[in-house]
Amino acid sequence: METWEVFRRHGHREPFEHCGTVTASDHEMALLTAKECFLRRREGEHLWVVRRSDIHSFQDESLLEIAADKSYRFNSGYRDVVEKRERAKARAKELASS
Image (cartoon, rainbow, N blue to C red):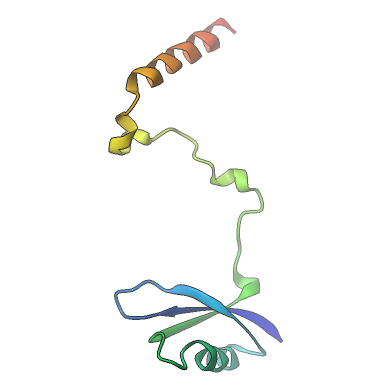
């Protein structure tokens, strides 16, 4: 028996959302069980089941950190420009002196 993650979608324009898990021996049984558990009251129209062991994530969460400041891409990035410029100048002086 394996654990399967279940995703459902309410309509063609909606995204799939995680709605729970089921335990089943294969993908066909997982789909049937998921249908009975998560669509019995017409809560959605489409189902996906994914074997939990097939879902992978980063072991090192630091890989998700942003490598460069790209706040200039958003309007909010232009707030406090003078302060950011002064910090950048101070950092440049610090790096030049070392």
